[in-house]
Amino acid sequence: MNNAIICAVAGGVLCGGVVAGSWRPRHEPAGSRQPTRILHYVDPMHPAYTSDRPGVAPDCGMPLRPVFDDQRGAVVATALGAASAGVVRLDSAQQHLAGVRTVAVEASSANERLHLYGRVVADETRTYQVNAGIDGVVRDLATVTTGSLVAKHAWLATISAPEARPAIQAYLVAVDVVDRASRAAESATAVDFANGALQQAVDRLLTLGVSAAQIDTIRRTRQVPTTISIAAPEAGFVIGRSLTLGQTIQRGDAMYRLADLRRVWVLADVSETDADRLTPAAAVDVHVPGRRGVLRARVASDVPAQFDATRQSVSVRLDVDNSSRVLRPDMFVDVEATISRAVSLTVPADAIVDSGRRRAVFVETAAGVFEPRLVEIGWQLAGRTEIINGLSAGERVVAAGAFLLDAENRVRAANLRPEP
Image 1 (spheres, one colour):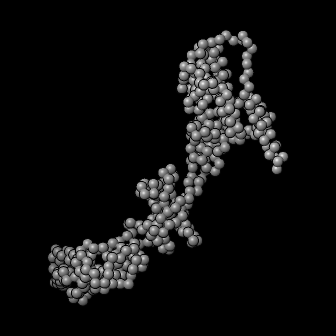
Image 2 (cartoon, one colour; image 1 turned 120 degrees about the vertical axis):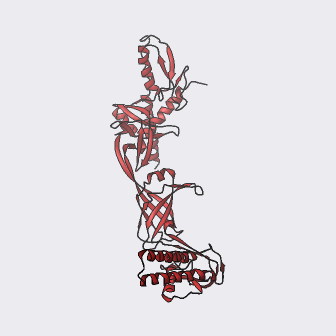
Image 3 (cartoon, helix red, strand yellow; image 1 turned 45 degrees about the vertical axis):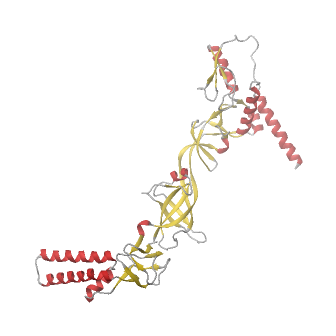
C-alpha cells in the first residue's frame, strides 16, 4: 500500500513537472525586435474588457494581455496573449504521461428518468355535493359513512319537510292535465303547454331535493308523501357526511359529498425546471407503495403547472385511469416520467472545468496545443453535458486531464500577478 501511494505521488509530481515545463516562455534573442508602444490591456477570455494598466481580469483572474500600436507589436501581443490565456503545449509523450485524452464535440440526445412524489385527489369534474333544498328534519339515515361506495340513485337519507307538499300536489295536478290532454286528443299546442307545465313542476321538486326515483313513485301512486328521500346523484365513494339522525337542516346545508374515483388526479411536486420539461399529454407511470403493478397517467393538457406557495414547488396535475379503484384521495404515490432531451452538442461531463464563476473547456486547437475556452452549458445527463454556446461540432476537447491543465493555468496566473 505504501509503495502504491509513493508511486501515485511521484506520478503526480512528474505530471505537474511536465505541464509546468510546457509553460516555460520562449524568449527571443536580445535586440531581435524594437520596443513598441502599448495601447491598452485586454482580458484574454473576454476581449471586450480593456484596462489602461496591467493586472488581472476581474472575472476569471487571467493576466491582462497588452495590445500594441503596430503590426509587429500585434504579433508579439498574439504570442504573449496565447501564453497569458493559458495555452498549453504537450507532445504525445507528455499527454500520455499526464493522462490527457481528447474527444470530439458531437451532437447527441438522451432520455432521463424523472422520479417524483405525488398526492391523489378526487377529480373535480367527478365530485358531487348533495345539499338540502328545503328546511326539514332528518328522520332516517342510510348506513353509509365516509369511505362507503354507493350506487347511482342509492338512498341516503329521509327528511321530513312539510313545505314540500304544495309543490308535490302541484306536480300531481300537472300530471293529470297532461293525461287529460292526451286522452281528449287536444291540439298539439295544448299538449305542449301541459307538458311544459309538468316539466316545471318536476324541476321544482328536484330543486327541493326530491329524487327522480321518488318522483316516479309519486306519479305512479298519485299520493303525496310525508317525507323526502335523498338519493345519490351518481355512483361513487362518500368523502364527506354532515348529517345525524334528528338533525334540523336548512336550505343550502351540505349533507353529503361523493366522488367518482374511476378517474382521479395526482398532484406531483416538481422543480420549476422539471415542470417545463413535462409536456402536456406526456405519459407517466404511477406506483403505489407496497403494491405491485403500474398505473398509466398523462400530464393534464388543459391545465398549466401551478405554483404551490406552501411547498415552494410547482404542482403538475396528472390524469389517472383508476378503474380498479386502487387510488384513494390523499394517498401518496411515486411518479416516474421519461424526459427526452433534444439533439444538441454535448461533451463528456469531465471536460467541464467549473470554477463557480465560469465554466470552461480545453480545446485542442492544433496537435498538442490546448486552449481554454468559456462555454455556456445546459442539461447534464448520463455523463454528458449540453453545450449551448462556445463550441462547434467536430472540435476536440480534453475529456481527461482538464483539471490538471486548469490547475497549472491557475498556478501560472498566480505567479504572474504583480506584487501588491
